[in-house]
Length: 211
Image 1: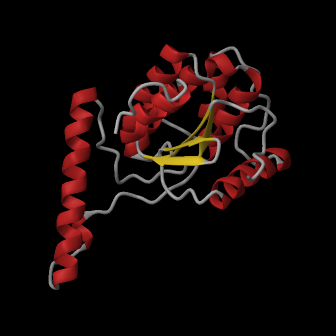
Image 2: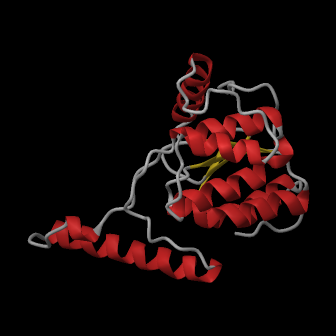
């Protein structure tokens, strides 16, 4: 078992990417799961792959046609589930940097763990509604939450850089490559579709498993 770069042992480690529509869609169901069952959680930012753009495939070969239809279907599925949650995914292809949002998540986790859900909701909203997500914006967000953000809001402080690198290395060593990913002990679950199984495991594996 690889030791995590934090001292506590949460029930659940949740790996998200602020720029990932899959993480955005998983946010509220995951928060609801933790809040309703009082599961402790550690949230981490991990930069995963971008969603493929169908326009990138000219459909001149069979393999390109297959990639095109897979990419188009994935985007249709994302749009369908986003509509259910009333989420706007129009920023899907913006690919803005999320380094400062990751810094903010570490700061909130250090200073006000009970405020992590509020931070996550606001950070995701800012990214997907194309609001500023640079260091100054993150400092302002933390100040609005009543947390001391100090002057290191642009993720260039050596200690913060080292911690973010340690988290990234830890997650990669676990084999994590996409988000959302859920970690319970040594078990990895990729995707929000596993939330019923995660609930069943954390509730003691009683009764029939959901799948």
